[in-house]
Picture 1 (cartoon, rainbow, N blue to C red):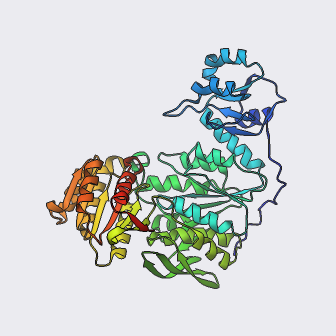
Picture 2: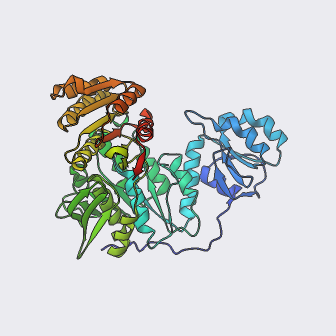
Picture 3: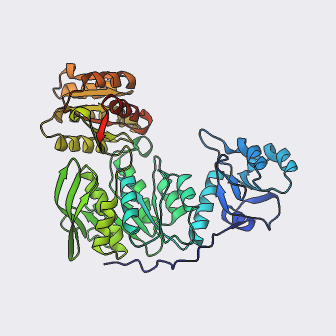
Length: 485
């Protein structure tokens, strides 16, 4: 067993303030106005929630530009701002009015936010677990946080904050009482995982799996592997990688002996394994096997893929020397995140599986497999939206999705989105009757579903985040009053 001996001791509850020197040192920015002896309680980027004792970083994003709100934050009493150097001229008049305000200019405010997060992580007593992978990141992160909270004071993201803005914002919430931060690292283009690893310098890095997600930016499965493996390369000195032994690409990354990495999975040589898996509509039971120890676990989640997420979280607990009962209790305390394989029993014996948070080919197939195992002899209906960010593979992957849907034995397939016709074509190729396939807008598919539903049906609703498939879930719940979850 490997116990993480580098864990720093817990400090006093005193907050860690930000001096002007701290901000300048972290960002390598230049002081435009203001006195160097000022200090701030925290760092913020939202003009609606920032407080008078915080410093404001003006993020220039794809949708919003924080520089437009500098006047508002200064008028609210904020006395510290970080801006892009090329925007200094725009705020000169405001700074002449607010002469006591500190203004720091940097080349790139998003990068500066990352450097502030990295600076705060370095001065914090907490160690970091970072989790990435094509599927299961959020569920694994939540499970790991539940496991570690049995013994440690843990920080995790308030929401799905896993990019170059969200990760630093989470790190900036670290307080001296935190012992571990459990983070999720996302990507859709090369270099993001390397940058996020640079920001958070993980002590433990978990890679859940490698699959066909974000191919538009990453190009291929090899591109996905290269991007995700940057987490293992970016660990802090003495850090450990936790890898899925059942994923051939990650197995190769670990090397022939797996030296230096802790392996989890169903494979016989995985240090953290699951045996005797059983699935019901209330959750999954399995036997958790650690070296020399075993215990039964009852997850409050459906989908066999959840077992791998649980094993990854258990592996983190094992690395930190937690007792197997603590690991079990943490896993059993986990409840699914909204929109991730949550099952609702509705009036008339209808069962609704809400997996609307996101979608890629692997997660689509996993969700349909779960539906088939749970429905028994009942009729099943699939309501599927586009899988986004697949690039040049989009047409082929959506045709394959339709083929898989037809092979699943679903009674009806309802598809919406730009690639709905491809899904339908794939289903017809695999022998599904055209009369059992509906394509149209999300609203049209939703209306067709409500007309089609019968007592005892099982319904899966799934699609990429941008498809807004949760609207279909709400319509079904409203049309068939829930009787319990």
